[in-house]
Each structure stands twice: as C-alpha cells, then as structure tokens.
Length: 273
Image 1 (cartoon, rainbow, N blue to C red):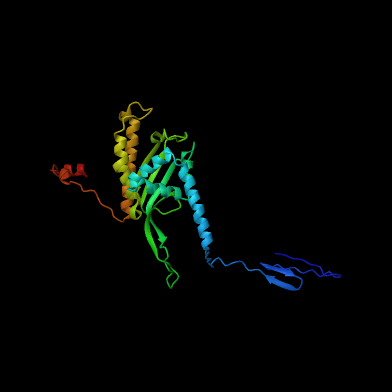
Image 2 (cartoon, helix red, strand yellow):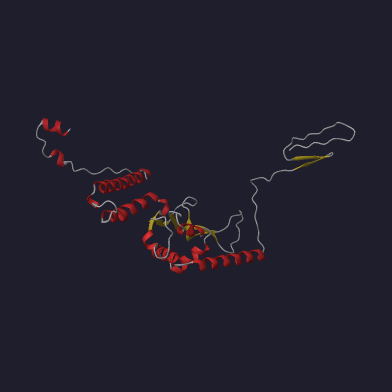
C-alpha cells in the first residue's frame, strides 16, 4: 500500500510501502492479515439452529413434491440393490445437497451417469463432549449419498445409472433408456470389484446378447467377436494389475508331461526347444 500527503507551506512528501500499513498524519496503523493456521469455531445460537432446521424441512418437502415416476424408478432400484426400504432411500435423496444432479440427469442431453455411494462415513455423535485434547467422539455409520465420483473416496458400494439416449427422460421411457448397475469397492478394492462386475455380469450378458443393432450377423460377426475378445483381454489386464498391486504373482501351472512324453531322441529335444 502506498500513501502520500503534503504539509501546508512545504514540499514534504511521505511514502509508506510497508505491507498492511497506513500512514495518517503522524500516526501509524498496522493491519495484520489473519493467520491461516488459526481455526475458527462458529457456534450457532438455538434460534439459528431452529431457523436452519426449518429451512431444511421446507427444502425437503419441496423436493418431495417433485418426486414422480422417474424418481420412483431410481428409488426402487436403489432399495432393491442396497437392501434399504424405499422410504429410507427417499428420505436420503431429498436430504442430499446434490439433489439437483438427479434433475440434470433427467434433462435432455443431460448427465450421462448418476452415481450413489453406500459406505461408512464418519459422523459426530450427538451430544458428545470434546476430549481433553480437543477431539470428539466420531462413529462410522453407513450412509447412502449422491456423488460426482471424484470428490469422495470410494470404500463401499457404488450404485450407478447410465443413460443411453440424449432425449429427455420421462416416466414412460426411463426403463428403456436408463440402465442400473452396482459394484463393490469394499476396503478400497476397486479393481477387484470392477473385475468381478465385468467378468461375472457384463461379459455373460454380452455373450448371450442376440440383438446387436446394425450388426445383423450378431455373435457371428467378426466385429462382435473382436469386441468380446477385447473385453476379455481388458478383464485379464485388470486381474494382472490387481495381483501386481497386491504384490502377488501366480504363475500358471503347466502339465509338463504333454511336452516330454514323446521325446525319444536328440532331434525331438531340439524341436521341443
């Protein structure tokens, strides 16, 4: 900061270049920025808490009024997959601060995917008193929440909805244009969960698929066979990567007898080599 002043009848000019300082006449006032290491605690009054709770209740009821057949489809799939009641899922969704992502998913040319995580989250125990060191008693609790997939760590179950069309999603077309799936990442084993999902669910479904759209030959088409081979190869790569990360490499057992059974002379050994 820089300040200048002139004294009456003179040419005295005073300049201050000290950061956070201001010169006024002969007095010096220093302004210090707040230290980033200082943590602030905001204590809400009982009136403020009541007002926030009132606003939250109004928001929930407004969202509840928006629920239609499309939301019911999502709720029923989540309830079946995660083993929660539809009422529990509904309450979770309308209380979620990312509720707007559902509307963005339904919109024409909207989000291509809608993700939900169901996993342990750390929540402070109600009416818990702070410990002598300032910490509080936190307990892990299973929670279902909407996510972008990039802001929270994935340690539990992922439920996802994928749209196959850019047209607006309605109650009448949602079952045809939206696909639902799940995979586990328990204890952070995401590769294992994805490997299981592809190998045990997706690949069997693909190999039993009869209608391949514009490819009239179906499974007899070389394009389809090449695609299925690529998917199989990708799953194999996932498996190898997972085992490497786990620092375990298991060599494939080989039946050596089929190689040495018919070796009778040196030329046979040379050929086998």
